[in-house]
Length: 439
Image (cartoon, rainbow, N blue to C red; front, top):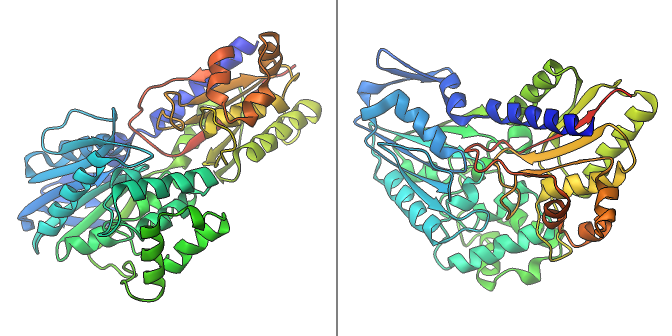
């Protein structure tokens, strides 16, 4: 039964990935008919534009660019989009720059400079199409003058290590960048800007997706500093970053734009699509689906324990749903790094859940990142069942010890359970599944 449940969980996760396909997301929301480019209730008369530029960044932005090329073809004047290494698609009009994620690198800086230059060259009568997907913040690094890439990388590491969530990380990035927090739209003035976004953000806050390069920014320098203080991380922040935030708080540096009038921002895909598709596939396979939420966040281990508690309740009482069932959740958790192991939030979720569902028969837990990469690993996530902990113990591996040192990758590498999809060219956060078969 366990082997069958593993296979079924894999099929359900695959259905979620298919639903999150960014190319199809663009084509569902955008159309070109009789020379009119229409999306989000707005129409762009193409013959009115002298130039059409395509810029942006993110793990899914290559596939998004391919959809725009299908729609506009030779009408595109030029384009530059930054993507994560390996997350490419064959394109003709838009150039892809492969660069580092989650820690920015020099390729990203070079590509971001070209993106900024293209935006700045746009004039009245031009249209700038900006494609943003998860990962865009790290993939479009454009440090302000006085802050080096190394200092920005160090800042990112501090935030990742202290367990800051994506909204907090992006708030910091906006205030040490020349593109984020609405500044790319400001650079594009007086051209029209259309920003199409694939959301990996809980609640689909436009200002958080990719750090909102074309969206008014409600955050401030004061909020940025407060985030570091919240985690006790201010002493670890590079001096140049500290100086900039302090200068901004005192009014010596202009804030990010609070109003933007030249940009239309539209979400074309989100975690909800992936979760709904997973629920449909689960139903097709004979499971009663129950979607808990698409907005789950918090410490990964705590979220895993909550899911495991629900599984135990279902097995014991049939509440809140009777087996056979599939409990689904979406969103993005965070890991506070305490050890020196290798893993990611999805693998850590599966490991923590495996400990808490130990001994339960006919229960399988899967957690995967829709981008195909979980943390600094080649796995999208992991799958476990009620016997995983005991099987590991028989091989001499303590699940609790692996969890304590944040070494979920090596745990599942040893006992089995890593999910490896390769780059999926999409990114709508995470999908978590619990399959519970009838007794």
